[in-house]
Image: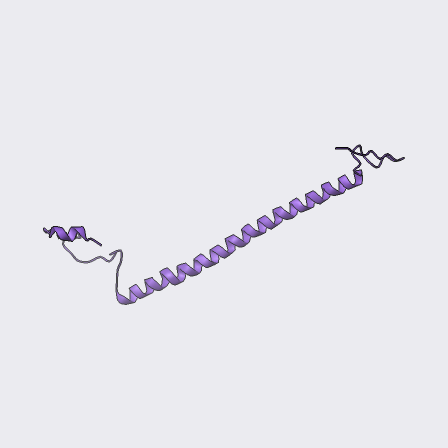
Length: 107
């Protein structure tokens, strides 16, 4: 590879024929482009967090909220938090002998 050397009175060109002004302009342009890339990345991260928060809030409100309201209207207590006047809170477990064929088709 051969490089031409241009010399002038003010030594505007370097040893490889590239103008010093061009090198300075390219370094400034590179800084601007890198700053723009970082700004776009930060903006994208911010928008992603905002959209995810909004979408997950909507899903939670409609999914969990509506289910909870329907369960409350139906009188269903999923966690069994209501205090009942019982002698014991233990649940009886029906452990009776079953036919062996029922164990093969559990689902």
